[in-house]
Length: 216
Length: 205
Image (cartoon, rainbow over all chains, first blue to last red; front, side, top):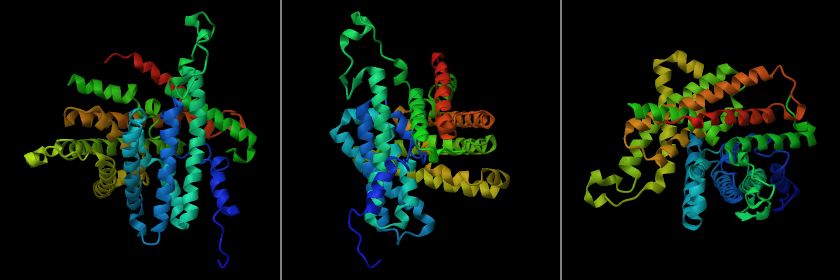
């Protein structure tokens, strides 16, 4: 305790990087799937969603960690929900003000960040027992791990499903059958079930690289 | 009467919470290891959904929506509290879950024991909040429609979790590649079930 820890000590950096691979909230801990899949048909909403979740996770971790010693144990869930809901309202209003079209696309899923299990999971498992700064980093790390998976899924779904990335056409127009070419978009990629199958494949690849993650 | 039936079928099959919107996936994946527990959670979700959606409907229409406070007097007619809806909905859900838990414990101890820890967990199940948020989005014309939607979306979630639990029970005897075991294969199966459910899109209601 005597020695003061650096702001970016090795232990703190690990809090940031661990959720990106070995403790990824989506593929390893199975948290926050609900919103992960519905917003990934295109890259732009996926990025906005990841940023929102990262901000809410980081700041709710920070706030709960600051007041962790004053929250009575029995009502901690309600306190957490109130803090999270307040932050989500802020994010929702900001999105509505600055990126209205994306906010319309995300529809109910911004509100659903409140019940996103990543938040509750991290608050319960980390912020309630740790100091504010590590909790903040843990929040950013988990948000980034969530964002990584989201952006990967969205990349494949938008590229193969609509032939574009971030709304820009990537596949040359003359390749399409309609223009006398040979290529056609895979319409199934835009449908919801393909998101699940892509997550399944990501998990498959990750676990075959890291056999210690395999369930028996 | 007919439009209630249509709404019910739409919310159970066409707009199934799990397969069309991926809502409630966390508990859907975590609690689907055996059919028995899955049934318990499914019934608890229907139960809570049936209560919270109509209650939140009343809240939305008599308190939060723009002009909803008209019944207080003309001066209140242009107040718009809709930015508060998230926090109000989640508070209603948490309170309702607590209330339902106490009532069930008092009057139906057998049901209480069989639902066990699932009731309190439901407060943070995304399916419940999503039910209320979709209700808000769909702008139902009366409380009957909201109630039917609540029951239907809960029932759709219940069907989904029971069927995946049944498949996972059978899956235990099959030879899945090691890295795909557990979570991976559950995702892929859910995807395939989702594709099958898309067949209901053809229904004209």
